[in-house]
Image (cartoon, rainbow, N blue to C red; front, side, top):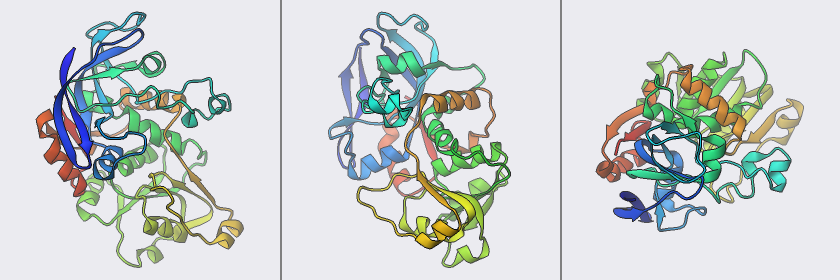
Amino acid sequence: MKFFAYLLEDVEKLNLVEIEKEPKEGEILVKVKSALTCGTDTKMYKRGHPQFPFPSLFGHEASGIVAEKGKGVGFLKEGDEVLFPISSPCLKCEYCLKGLENQCENLFEEKVWGAFAEYILIPKRIVKNSTFKKPKNITFEEGALLDPLASVVFSQNIIKDLNLKVLIIGAGPMGFLHSVYSKYRGYDVYVCDINKERLKIYEELNFKTIFSEKGWEKNYYPFDFIIECSATRNGFESAMKLIGKGGKICLFAGFQKNFYLKFDGAKLHYNQNLIYGSFHYDRKAVLEAYDLISEGKLNLKKIFSGYHKLKELPPVMEKVIKGEGLKFVINP
């Protein structure tokens, strides 16, 4: 089938081009109903990405309707509404066998990529392991949140404590998903950012917000759990100042390569703190994210900052770069 899709040819150079794809055995071709802007796409748009050299199809958070299917896809039929993550582990490599599915050596050999398009191809492994029928009670844009929400769920699954005082540093779209999920888990949630307009979104949902001006940390110590979503040195340094005894810090946002951080080793030792990174997700987190979305357990509506047609993507990306809104919905 021939259709139009955005091709990122170089930094900040998007072109809408006609491409052709047909589903092979085990694959499905999905008519995109909603695609979402994302931080990973934004970084790729601004500076490129080592995993996706130019030129590259663009976008990865989407949901839609099965338009065509290859041989051997028995549980889906044309016309089914579906949601899916961007990847699934091979279950054969060294890391998969250790239970580290998110570190799978072959994770992105089969991937969902090219959401900003009329159609998107879903590879065999993802069709088999992690493609779900969309419940009628949720919207397509909510279904497109499966991938980012799975990464949030995965990152917090290490925390088993109850009644925690939680700080989320960075009020962007991932900070939003962390906030609503942390609230669902029963935590006392604070959100901080340098963007007052973004904080207003959280205030409307009755989150405690902090405008992170100079010296703000001295008024809020200590926190039990801090999720760093800004990928900045200042964000990490604030987390180290604010973490209490026995507290844990999750480095959730992706730092640039060779981005080194400093911390007080004595504090880490004597206060028995844990600093950990979190990347991507496993199948368990995807399933939990699907259940949360399909059962309407999270208040997700406020994350959507506007709706646009496919041809309007370039100006939407400029809004994203300026820090406007959270997630914009592209409806082809």
